[in-house]
Image (cartoon, rainbow, N blue to C red; front, side, top):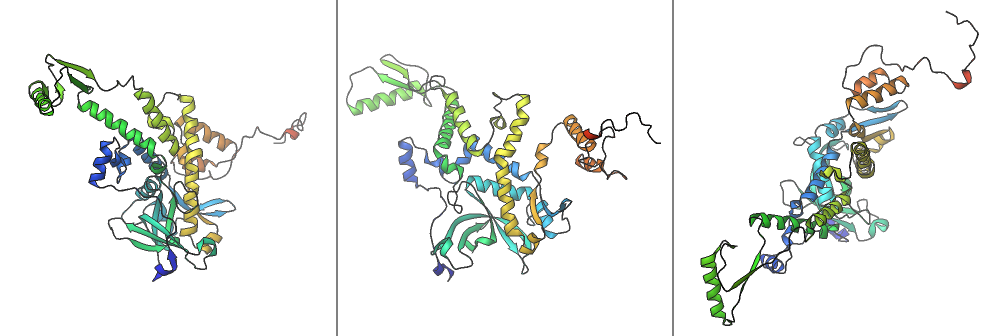
Length: 411
């Protein structure tokens, strides 16, 4: 039994589960624990939007298998791994669906994982998203362990509730927030109080709309009646004659009515809600303009914020994926040949047609791109004779100025 060689050292954070009685007791004290049972946190609009933006931003960038050469990176389209990265990691998922699933699990569960199916020679056959349950470390520790596989993984497959086991080098493991480099915690765990505030604010608005935008009210009987039975009879009579689904239409003599809730303006609801949205977004590295908040954004700063989102937020995610799959998907001999997996992040820097034309023109006339390379970037067919670098003939070195002055140019 392999379990004899392992012991449970630390588990990834899990979401607490509550019984119906516990939920009722928490609700009586004003605590909505249902928001964190299962996928309850995804009901918070800002949190869900941030998860959606992060997963789609990663998934829309193609990942290519390339080989580093003296003339630059060469795409290895003839390798079997190339199609698995670009088109279908497994027979049932596109590359976009696969990377989206891993990123959703990374940010929502804390771990985005995929099982690597290989043949006897070590070639990758398929990649399957899985849900990580826990990591079990050899009781001697990562440093002192003499075992080849020091970490055991417990996971479940898509559509299968049975817990299965594999070794750590058989999975792709993308981590969220980690303090030890192995276990990681999801954003919803670290930001639980802020997300809880967002869920409660949404629930408050829903209840307010359900009540016809009418605040709750307290009806006070101006009487000295003290007997419990008499009070119950008076309350029942009032509900029967003067109330309809909790909404008051007529107040009889002898009663005083006062509102119970503060107004949205008095409670500074908008300011608190915006602060909550900003805190959730900043925990993901999402810019406010991506959440349709254009208050502090103009046309000049929008492009800079998009570039900032790529550099400050996405770049480290791309690097973590590339380092993980380079080590797990490629054999040592392939890495020695300069093979590596790289995301083409330049697709995020696409601009308007006019700006793109100006940029490509400068690259071509400066001898950086060939005309055919520029045509390829605009999805145009290559032309014969356009594979050589061209430069402006009027450009010369500073030290050569004046050398031909007064001399006849030979024809």
